[in-house]
Image 1 (cartoon, helix red, strand yellow):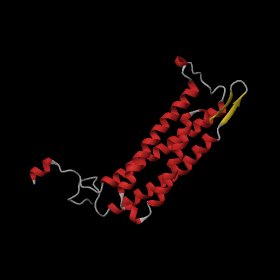
Image 2: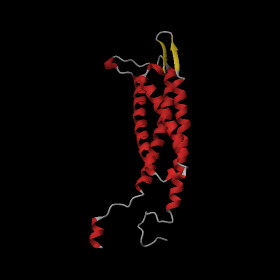
Image 3: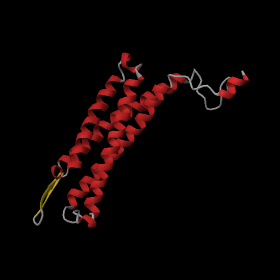
Image 4: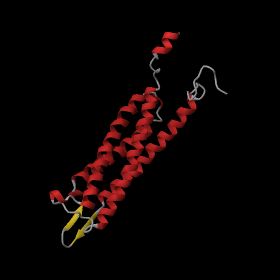
Length: 188
């Protein structure tokens, strides 16, 4: 049964607490999932090394973009853990902007990190013949396969932060009334 004063799809005041609690549950689950995924990404990347008798050793320290990915993963894991804890502290929960701004920043950081790591994985697999960079995965297959798995986990963290940024944006902007519709103001 629909109230005559509400439009279809609009949330009533009775449904608002249910929606906020379900959003809080999803928010907490996403934040908690970021921590082990980021730690796994860091572990896979940092422990990744392979030797080749013809070309020498290859590890994550050899590639600057992987250092950036590890750094971003570490910062994101720490932020996700701290924000999960602080989301259950009553005085901080009412501060929607406290979660909105960092969630946006970390979503952008993750986007740049995934883009950089994806480019590295692509170049390792395919090379870049015009600049005489040959592919290295035929010489270092173990290194490339572990790095591809780390990139996949990193992509999951990116999606988690994208969803978190949408949830925090909803929380921050749902505090305000929608803008006035000029046509409804003229008819009133």
